[in-house]
Image (cartoon, rainbow, N blue to C red; front, side, top):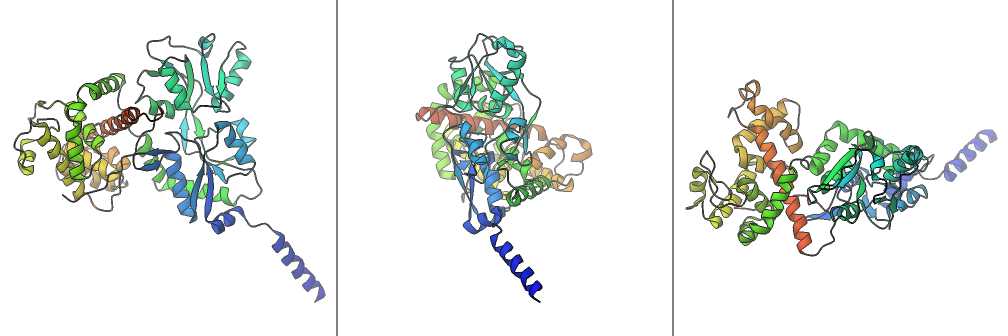
Length: 465
């Protein structure tokens, strides 16, 4: 009996001395501490509030745990990994590339995206064909970044290779300095480069410096794997149910649509043409509860802000309304910019309201734009086909994969409305999203905001017509 009591007492003492698992501590405190950085690829304040790929993922993870996420922005990039290794936060979600050197400091979770490191130069200047072509020029990078790790490895092979590692700027600032020709070259992750090329079309990737590399969250090395295991389960779940794919599409699914000429022409027209119609876009947006920059982006995609535009099929005006649609909306003159813009705004809202309420923004907006271009009936056909093919008809990332099938007899013969140029509808939506982001950036520049690229997420609240 005494032996049994001794065993029970010893067990209870051990149980009492055992530390509470970190996951349980987080749930008890109700707060998940996350280190990140201000960047359009991670965490930033857009037109509708905080957003970014890492922000969206962390918010979903925190919701899964039943806690609130609190984000911490360190002074410089070099502070991120030491802060995690010293357990000053629970994890880092900062677009971190997994490297062997970093794995000695932190424990990486599952990969959720892949990037390549790219050497960036400015169009009109010498394009380097190999990394040694930068010798004698000004190459600046972020201190403590995976880019610096890569250059350190390359220097073993090319001793004359030189660069300046800076801890006082972010990657977007270096890209701006390159655009202004203050520096000759920089290195950026491919996702960062693609986002910023919308605003600085002069910037080009000279070459990939690496093979594809994974991005992942960083955790402290610890015997306690409770939080790490929760993250493993979380990413396994969102990969399986398609949530991760939808989030990545939301932030990156459209960014490479416009070429160099498209971007330069758009920026030129934003200066020369848009001021003539800006007040009309704002008035129509206010009446229909839209962001005026969205309506302006649609107008540009439709007509390049030409009030006399006419297509071979007979659609006319800035918003390129059909005669039938104009009559339905009570528009007397499609060539009148005010009537055309107001009519276009009202028609988009009509289409948007036909989409089931369960479809959440921003997906419902992008579907409404596709319906504006291709017709609501064809949009519904694509949604039905999406579901039949095992996709989610309420997610734009899945529907945009199905729309191009509407040109193939094998598929459109199964639909109610038949053949449609579905690929054009996808291109249409992607272009509008890019034009919107450029307009939002130009507005920030006009308002003397910091010259850092910050793409805006389109979250439009429905209004009653």
